[in-house]
Image (tube, rainbow, N blue to C red; front, side):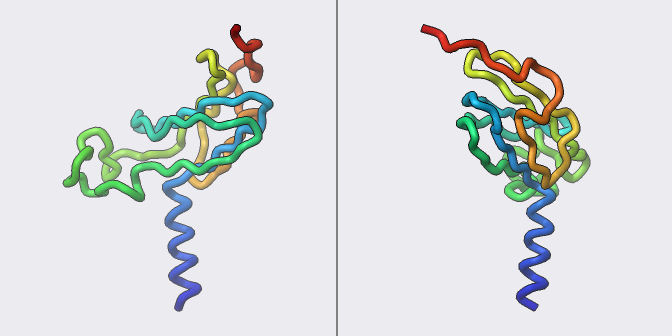
Length: 123
């Protein structure tokens, strides 16, 4: 029974999370937008660092009765696929992934779009 409960929890948590890995040589800011347009997260991610982002499914009121339900509405709108944008410290686009699935690991260098490089640091 314990194995079943743990397995069920892991399966459910995969549907409301995204792992992001900055596999570049630059510190980047990652922005994640849900399919319904809701801003999920924005984090600074050091070079060669992996972090975890959870959407509001696991921490919100899925029937829309709690605070913040007006913009979220996960009871009627799909959260996936996610749009993941990687930005350099100067704000320029490093790369973007437009169809990241729930539970996926998104890396900065495997995303399309953007220059996949950052300008030399400012003085």
